[in-house]
Structures are given as C-alpha cells and as structure tokens.
Length: 330
Image (cartoon, rainbow, N blue to C red; front, side):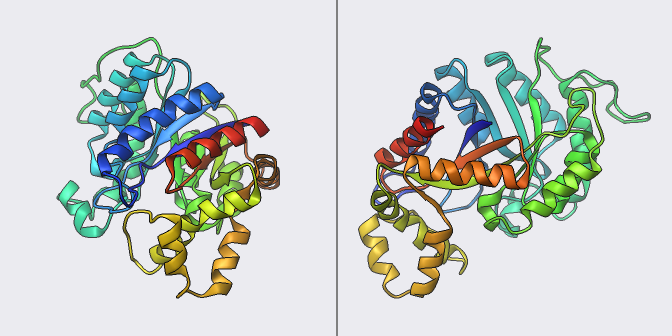
C-alpha cells in the first residue's frame, strides 16, 4: 500500500496566515524524511479556514526543498483556468522536479459562487467544459495530437521535458469517477469531505466503467481520509477537539481559523454532545497502530490501491508528530 499526505494550509487562531504556507513547505520535508509516497496541496479561494490558494507556487517551493517525494495538486480547480496555461505551469514544475509531479484536477470551485466569478467571468459555463479541458490538457502535457478540427491544434506547451506530470482526477461524487474512467486516469475520492458518503459507490463505478489508456492500462484509485495519531488515544482525542468544533461549525456555514484545544473545548459545551461523541468515534484518531489498522481496513474494504491522509491540529508539533506516528506504524 502507498501512503501519502494532503495538506491544506489551515489557518490557525493566534498565528499569522503566512506561517501556514511556510508550515506546509516544512511539513513536506518532514514527510519526505518519514517515507511518505506523495505530498499533495489543495486549492481554495476566499476561505477563512483554508488559505492555500495557489498550489502551483507551493509545489515549486516544495520541489526546491525536497529530493524524492512526489509532489502534486489536490487539486487544481480546472474550470477557473485555461487548460493550456495549466499544462505550461505543470511542464515547468516537471522541469524543476523531473518525474515527481502529480497534477490532481477537480471540477468544484473550491469557493462560493461569487468568488468563482471573480476567478473566471464565465464561471457558470466553465464546469460543463471539464471533460474537454481534461482531454486537451492531457494532449498538451504529452505532446499528443488534439482532436480533429481543434482551433488550437498547432499550439504547443513548453518546455519539452523527458517526463510528464501524472494526471489524477479528484472528487467527492460519481462525476469525477466517471471522468477518470472515461480518460483512463487514476482517481482519488475525498473520503474526509463527506465522511465517506457515496465513496464506495464512486469507486465501484470508476472500476466498472474504466477505459484502459496507454499510460494506465488498469484502473488505479485511492481515498483521502482525515486521521490523527498520537502516542496515546487520550492525546489524539485531545488534539482532535479543534477539528470537531470546526467540522460542526462548517456544517452551519461558519468558517474561520482552527481554534486552540482549550477554546474549542469551551465552545463545544454548547453543542449537541451526542453529535460530538459520534464525530470523535467515527474519526480516525488514536495511536499510530490503531489509526493505521483503520486505514488498512478501509482500503481493503473499498478496494483501492492507495491511501492519503489529511490532518488538522492547532498545534503544529502535534501535526508533525501525527505523521511520524503513522509512518512508524506503517
């Protein structure tokens, strides 16, 4: 099993947001030393909790400070951009870190509707073009012919490189699974986003409808889960407190920086205690071996090839320790 990391550059109460970006770069170095397979960074906009807005820039910074770990986007929200420009950007990244770049693509805006229009004036139409944009992007990344009659058939993406980014489709619904299957691409389901709702169906649909491609003759898929490991279950549950409150407030549309454990615990006193216990019980939180056992069980049950982990804690030291505990148990 391959085990990877997703980092979202979370805003944390009491610390400047720019530090969150630098912590992401430092965490990538830490995870490389621990032996993780991939390190992916996300894209969100106008989001007071998740301040990673430009994954391509963070990937470049990580490429300059690591040597072996694969680095990628999870993902580039393609409807905001020209497929040609994304191809150029990721060919440059591949030149900086040959054979180490993953290009995860998503269709969701990663923001609210108004922000989507601030990013692209035709935001209401762009998602419909996602499949054709993916098709064109693949052609530009691999110097392959465009479809017959394409208006940009003579346009080439530079620089030419000996390797190329590995394209993944990301999603939390059947749609992404179908697009990945259509083009014969790897697929990763955001299990953490929906607590797995619809995940098994999406993976089954992906496998059942998969069309083999030259680069990927067989389906290849993964799940990304939230996980938090610590030396003891008590410590893991302690640090989980901040994320429990954030999750409850997110469902009400209340966004903001991740609060300290103490402030979150105080705020949770006014919340539904049964729901709090349910979130704690369902979360992959515990010692390294306990969390790894749940990750492996889920992988085997759903039938995927890879797993990725995302971890939110107010304490940066606790977050780094969580990945160390997982690596030790892996």
